[in-house]
Length: 446
Image 1 (cartoon, rainbow, N blue to C red):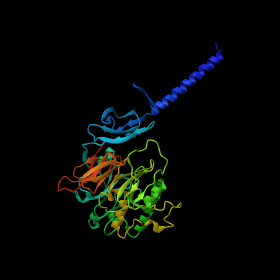
Image 2: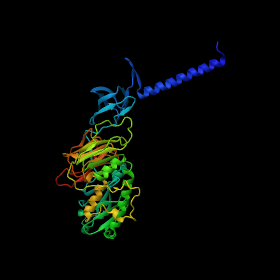
Image 3: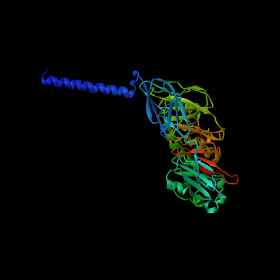
Image 4: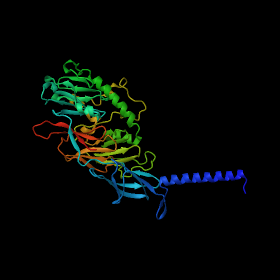
């Protein structure tokens, strides 16, 4: 017999081996390294995380019903056609690549087949303009039954029931000789102020109070300094976020592209190529389980692309969908310079958006803040989808160009369509009677 000390040592070593071996086996099992099946042990499988929003949807792989979301499936490496469907929602389908020991996620966002429709205004709206932060809408109305209810309103895009119940908030009453029906709105970068541009005067409106238009000072003579200060703020933000992209992408964005828009999470870039170019591969180290959809790194003028800086993938998402009413140009075209410009040292560098007439200046600022006024494609708030108008329908697709889904095909004005901040609704302008003015409606899509 072994001495007591030696027996205890042996038991300890055996226990340690069992624990370590079990841990390693569990890790390999979780990674899909090995799976026990009725046919024996299968090596080097991959994992498919079949998740959807909302959950509880059917999952079909190669046409066969296999499970419901949310579930994790162990599959042999290869490509699979995955379909996810739920009653009352548009189906989702994608060709996915499953790689050994890696997790591939579906992240399927499902949208309602029969969206709800609810009015947000009742007296007609004109000159609708969304704020840079996407949280507010400003507009003018002159169709209210009482004259004192005509004027400029702000609608907070909030899901707070009390806020929605109160509806739009009037920030200025109408003044007939101001000709507000011909006015333009120009937002400050922080969305706290609006420069009201009328044919005869220009006034700075505060959004947290009701403004008396007749008592506000005319900003016409000092507007240039104000707008330059706003441009400087926009330039600094753009320089900070765009500077996180690879130099080759920055070069294309600043020299051979237009209508460049960052996604809400600042990780993807939507842009229209203006010159033929090739985006070289491997700009950043490859990451596991990245998007395997077909990309396009050979840029064609007029085509619209999305570049993902986390996965170094570039997808063609369409061509120019509508004639442009304005074009956005970047402000931070000096990203390769270590020292940023300042308004004090380079005042002329912050007048890029200021045109010879106020209407064009307002259009330039509006186009800078949202693609609503340029190429029609807009970022959805989740940064994973794009929205656009096509043949009288509101369509949404994933940022890689896949899964086009019609959200709404009823009557609406094609020049305005805007997502709610949390992605639960889409704002439209429409009228259901030829004798009634257009009003804002919310289309419930989730």
